[in-house]
Length: 170
Length: 101
Image 1: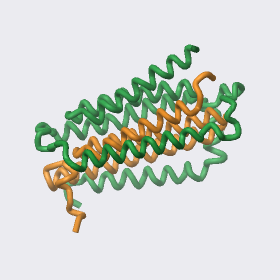
Image 2 (image 1 turned 60 degrees about the vertical axis):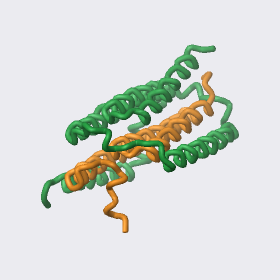
Image 3 (image 1 turned 90 degrees about the vertical axis):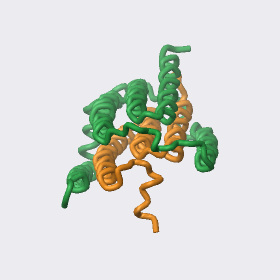
């Protein structure tokens, strides 16, 4: 058993536990904290998978920017009485859980076919500089230049849309 | 590399299913929103696992675009939640039914 696999299984268990805790927490603020822990676990998995740049971006963008926004909204709305959101065990919850187990079985069944891909012999060892800023940047500004420019348009539309939606009176 | 690819894919499937479970069972709009973020992250993990498996950087660039879309979605989605709360004084998705006819 190598060090890498021990780290992987520990981080994977932590990711699943924090994800389950997030969906079970009554308090939305506790859910947000569990989700931040989950994002850190996923960033650690990115590091194992040689995606250093995206691990940093994951922490900065997700755990930093997006979750700060979510926590800010939770505190702004001041959802004190969670009792009003009655999360009782009704038919929808049972049906939803059943559907999710069906989905999970289906996904795991499909994952069983994943090793039939042509190069299933293992990770290429020479690709140690796979996730550096240099390699991602050169791919993004040559092969993916047009999607990159479209992304800037999307972000502009999101900025304008968010301001108009959250404004008091148009 | 000692961890096989399908373990990453299985972990990603489990995280995605947990996210779906949260979306289907929770009634708080903000928690539903966070569960959608969890599903996006599960898909990102699949993309990066395949990127490392195939030695191709395209999957990582795709994850970068997914993160940009997630940031835009967070800004617009939270603005929608704030606007809804201002009108209805609730974030319970059972009581937000003004689009239902």
